[in-house]
Length: 425
Ligand SMILES: Cc1cc2nc3c(=O)[nH]c(=O)nc-3n(C[C@H](O)[C@H](O)[C@H](O)COP(=O)(O)OP(=O)(O)OC[C@H]3O[C@@H](n4cnc5c(N)ncnc54)[C@H](O)[C@@H]3O)c2cc1C
Figure 1 (cartoon, rainbow, N blue to C red):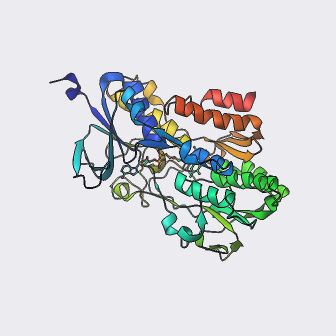
Figure 2: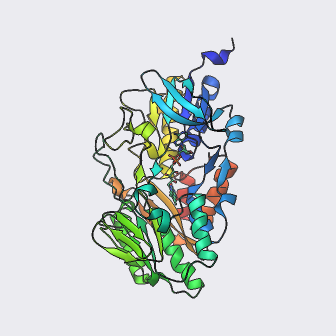
Figure 3: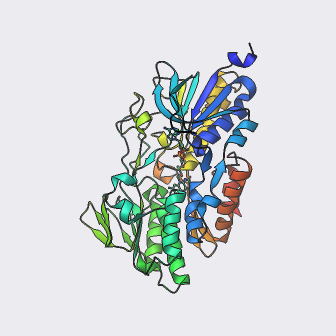
């Protein structure tokens, strides 16, 4: 019998931003002390943040935003199973899955000593009436290409453009006092696309910001960036000519003529770009460790309460609000230290690190410029930085390159180097 049979087995469910990075941090912290198996239905990471940029520049995002994960994990000595996770049995410490390479595979079971839930959330376009026929978005390569082809291959006739979020349903049970209610799950992408469209229209002599309406279900657009930045953005956007429509409550319906909102407002649009509700996956929502919506309740070290060997990270965790990959990245390191501490590979002091949320976001604006937000004001902190310029565009591109080159373990969104370059230089 080999030694490895005796090692604790860590099973990581999901291998996009949170799962891949968590698996890599666990290997870094624990070395050879654990066996790690990652399960995901797909064998590549979808680098979502750069899809808007590719679409606006008429580049097929499928050619540049997919990062194969098998080799990266194999080099770490981590196993990967391409499979659909069908059931999680917390009392039996087992995961049930169906291999996804070929349809017809029979169900399999894997037991674990530690379980990391990194399955993200469903982006619920199917909850929006009319979306399939009339809606656009940029959260994956299919939708990105559909919008790109409409814009760049003769479909777009120069009509008005509406961009914004549907209502996000956030749970309340187990929620700490410092975590406010977000009405949009992720408000950075609507801002990024709005600014990019203003430039894009101008470059084509088709108008500019006056053709674009940015909408938000909450009272304040981009409220999660903190009051000061949200106000600054609001003023700047209105001066540029954008229309801002707040308190829309939710998207009721998308039609050929535009969007109707739950508030009774409506907006005329030839192109309706919507970021939907982030809804928990059923396989997670049914577990007895979630809030009433279905996001996993954890402490600041990402442990679930009832099962201390079970962790959640990234978009499936209730603490991850707004839904940002940057949050998952920080949480990955926090929870890897917990497992390392348990197996004797991290000191008490190293295991002290907790999730301390900060919003870090780079959004492109066209003409090789981008904005940069670094803030924890919404959580009650005192960081509030909002900058724009060429350097931030270069940093956004460099971050993706670094992420791909290092296989999902870059110096990170939020490490001191990024902050230093962005804020001090
Ligand atoms: C347009 C856009 C731009 C964004 N830009 C930024 C940005 O600039 N900065 C930032 O920090 N965040 C950004 N985000 C948010 C970011 O994309 C998410 O927060 C991030 O993807 C969450 O990572 P995750 O790994 O937790 O979940 P996901 O990315 O959703 O990954 C979950 C993984 O689990 C797998 N999975 C799910 N269910 C199953 C199952 N049953 N069986 C097997 N596998 C399964 C999926 O295949 C997937 O690989 C953006 C989002 C959008 C839509």
